[in-house]
Length: 509
Image 1: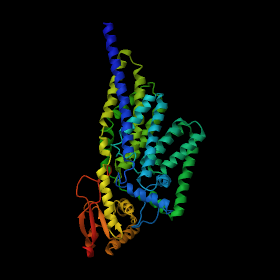
Image 2: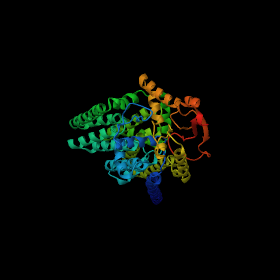
Image 3: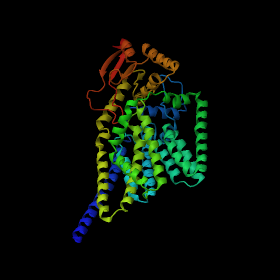
């Protein structure tokens, strides 16, 4: 009888080992899959996402010595982000040349940095390389559900990387120098995307509990850097910096109806195992198990800051899947650390139950990875997309005079023509801003340009996609469709839109 029990335990133990290898393999597979996708599309010469082209406009202005934060006009309107990503990308573009490649390179390197920090943080916390790999792989597995965004020419990967660095330093720092460096990284994260400051606030609470003297230094430095940079940029932009960075984002409407969808669809449906582990950890903690109270509080606060920050962005009108990246990074970290704590607890129960519970935990991990599976091929543009883009550039080149493509101004730059304000930046001011004078001045400028037939052609996306199309149709005539097929030149992520119709002045019918 004893032999049969022993054989059964050994059999369950072997199954546990195989499942552990399977979990590790899944984590590594997701990491490799992301690397393959990012490298396959980093040199794609057109937009992976519909706002990427506008990012190039910002970099070009920096390289030409022009200000980013200027009075809004038909020629240029900045996005509502702090400028660090643009400066980093501009430095890269000085070496590689202007285009999508240097901007995506910055994001790609930052995403690798995120994987490394998550690995290092979890490995150091659990004293186990395996858990570090699982955490990095779990974050990599969220690539598609967070918009397939890690490597594109947008600010998110850089701001999350810098924020994770600050979190790591606060967790393991034991000197005033470390806290000073952490404060600098928090500022740099804020200087990439403003929401970082809000996400870091719960971590500051832990920091005060852990070492209030060092934290006062961190907070003081952070205030100096944030206030100092704001005053400086305001002084050189005649106050437009504050308008774009603080005033305009604060005017965005909140859609509270998305609250339930965030928790139900974005969190619970995508991370059910992580949520279950959280539920298991709470009773373990309150029953005075071997869970370290300080560790529990720290990661609870990290997760709280990142989830609330993502929720805040999600509720804003226009919040896309990319706003979930911080929440998923926090969940990847806390979930795997939680798993390690559960395994510690399992070691304290009767030996005949340990191996069975370990098998169940590994099965749960595999289920979590399976729930995040996606088709990597769909994330990579095709050769046909490249060919369609080149044909479109040739069409724009052949049109004499000025051409405006509101949603994809970078295309006119590629065709050797003047660029204009991106439709999203225009939308932020006209439909989200509350300064009537600024809105009406901008609206008047655009309408007058259309009435005077300043443009030799206006290329619009889908019907009524541009808010001035009713004016365009009074002075311009719709020409032919740009693309004959319905499956080419669409961005692989973000809003699905592409140039569709050419409008020409009526006298040129």
